[in-house]
Image 1 (cartoon, rainbow, N blue to C red):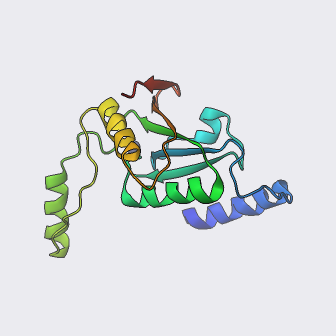
Image 2 (spheres, protein in one colour):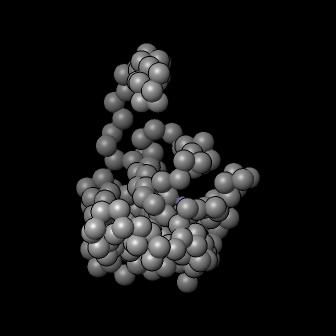
Amino acid sequence: MDPISELLQHNVDYGARHGVSHLPTEPGQRLAILTCMDSRLDLFGALGLSLGEAHIIRNAGGIATDDVVRSLILSQRKMGTERIMLIHHTHCGLHGLDEGQLREEITADTGVDAEMTFGSFRDPAENIRQTAARLASEPALRQVEIRGFLFDVDTGFLEEIDLP
Ligand SMILES: [Zn+2]
């Protein structure tokens, strides 16, 4: 069976166990989490989160892009979140990525100039601080508490990163 069909089978079981719930749209912990798309990050397990408690916004690297800002504006103004957790992690695919090489690869494959930046970084802690600084300087966002963490994908522990 192909992977997606197998997941659909799992959903039949999930729906049967799930029952009907009517959780509010507003996250119960009034929390938004920005994190990486990495497949080893299970925030529900790692943080003891339950459904309905937090917004989880994910992209490659967990960095503050324009679209993340868009999501956070909605999260804060329309769904009442009041604090932000940034969770980056060890062994990230963006750590040390050669963006120039990736752009050349895309151009060679497609003939199109890939002018975007991909968010590669050298220092995970510095990357978290930069993400926090970008969010703190966004005028459309509320000035809420932001805390930053590095998740160790080998051990499952979070380390808090001091933000200025
Ligand atoms: Zn990552």
